[in-house]
Each structure stands twice: as structure tokens, then as C-alpha cells.
Length: 187
Length: 243
Image (cartoon, rainbow over all chains, first blue to last red; front, side):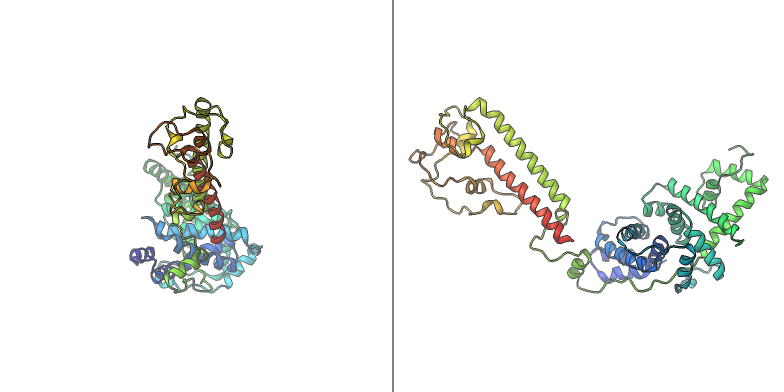
């Protein structure tokens, strides 16, 4: 695990290069949260850029909490803003979304976590479809905790809700996802 | 939890994360020992989580690094703010902060005028609102201390160093004396001419001078009203330039 604290402190003193190190470290995760929230790659890219600009502007307010939880909260808010102001429609059909996500090149991060299984394209598309069909609050909880690996505490901070709410959204979303995957014959 | 009750989705989900508190976790585990159906549910849930964990990230279409400009220019770019003549501290630059200050100043103004008006009937028979512009007909010998403090005839003493537009200053603490004088200075002095200035703290000034010159309360009220208006204007200016 990279110690990002020196970069955070330098960025708080206005050091753009230090902040860009943080951008490099978190931009893939931030964009993936955004694309699964907005379901549109162009809007997601714009929202992610906005989020990093806001994060740099506000980084002096960051005190002692998890940087990524704090960042993801900004990303989620940027997504809500983008949705309010965007004229683009979210990719309408769930199949189209899964296809769009399927066509985007994958980030090269396999080396980071050897425990990750390699999913077939079919399985991947089934999961994306099932995720896209979830109510947004359940989907966000699952994306943050199960896909991005945040703790309950971090997810509660990112979603600005109590831990108990994270727990129940996760439980409902996971159960629904499991049932969808069973129905799709993924198991 | 009764041993025969099936585990809830929330219990199974929290159990997988190690987030189920102890007496409950033990009860669920005991139930799972004897319940095939709940074991299958849990196993499927575990596989679902494993798949989610293995879901590959899509690559961002571009880098989101901020451009490497000097700090100040980045700061302006980041906030979308143009360089402005109004360089305010950050906490003050928010329109809400300015509006809150304006509200406080307005409230203070109101309190001052109400207090002033409440004192008037006791100390003076003339109506309060006209006292700024019209010379009072009646003598006011019993006016209390504050009325006299600023009542020296200033026609005899030319104002030195009094700014012409004291009310327009943006600085945080307007000097009530100079600012208010330039506001309320009458165009011509007649009646007060030749009357010797009263000693500081002397209870009553000359009647007509007391009528012509606003009390310190009212001076402060006028200054505060100006501050209120200035802050309101600034809050709009700041909001506009911040866009």
C-alpha cells in the first residue's frame, strides 16, 4: 500500500504535482464509480474531471478521514450534478449499457490483486446487467464496498449515510444480484 | 434468534463481512449448521461477492491530472473565478457569509433606530424621523448626553481630512465619526454659528444644533445601513464573479 499522506499534505499546501500523484492513484476507481452511477462513459469522464477539480479546491478541508472515501463522496456528488445538468440521456437499455461497458478497454490492474478471478466476458456482462438493474442506492453501496473494496465506515462516509443504512442496502442489493445471476444461469 | 428461524439476508450479508455482532453471529452460525437452505443461500452470496470483487475495472478514457500551472492560476482555473478587485478572505468571499453579515448589520440598524425612537418621546417633543432634515422648532434643553456629544458647530471648524465619500469604503470597520459626518453634513450652517462648542460630556447642546445634528445612535444607524447595503452589493458581485 502506497503511503499517500505526504502527497495529501503537499497538496494541501497547494502542490499540484503532489495532487496529481493522488489523481493517478485513484482515477481508475473514481471513473469506475462514476460510470456505474451515470451509466454513460462521456458523462462519467466529465464528472470525474469535475470531481478532481473540486477535490483539489477542497483538499484543505480534508481532516483525518480516508482520502478515497472523501474523494468518492465528491465523485458521487459530481455525478448527481452532472445528471441534473446533462442533456445526454443515460444509456437507456441495460443491455446497451453492459455492451458499452464491455467495449471499454479494461484497466491493467490484474497484477495488483492476484486473488481476482478472471471472469469470462459472458459472466462479466451478466454482472454488469444485474448491477445496472439495481436501484441506485443499492448499486452504489455494492460498487463502493464489493467492487472498490471500501469498508462499511468508508462507504458510510462516501454515501453520507449511517453504517446501518450501508449494511441494509448492501444486503438487499446483494440478495437481488444473487437472484438475478441465478436466473441468468451464471451459477 | 430462535434456532429454527432462517437467517435473514441482512444477517447473511453482514456475516460474510464480519460485521455481525457477536451473540447474533453465534446464533446464525448455529442455525446454519442444521439448515441446508440457509447454507446454500450463504454460499451463493459468497460466490456473488467473489464475482463482484473480480469485476474488472474499465480504463478511464483519459487522464484526469490537473494541468501543471502555477498555483495561483490553477486556483483561479479550479474555482472558475476571475481575478477580481474584491480580494476577500475565503471564509468571507461566500455570498452567504456576506449576506449573513449584511443581515446582522441590518438587525443592528433596526435595533438602533427603535431604541432611538423609544427614547425620543421622553427626551424631546419633536418627531424623530424629520430631525435629520428639518430644524426642530422646540428647544431641547433636557436632551441626554449622547445628543450633545457631536453637536459642536462644524461650520466654524473646517473639516480636515474627512473623506468625500466615506460611505463607499469597503473596509471592515468604518470610522463612524468621519463617515457619518460626510453623510449628514448639511449644506449650510446658520443657526449654530457662533455658539461655543460644549465641553465633552456636557449634557445638553444648543437646541437648534441638537435638532440639526443626529444623535450618535442615528449616526451609527446610518453607517450601519450603508454597511448593510455595501455587503449586499458585495454578495451579489462575489456571486457573479465566482460563476
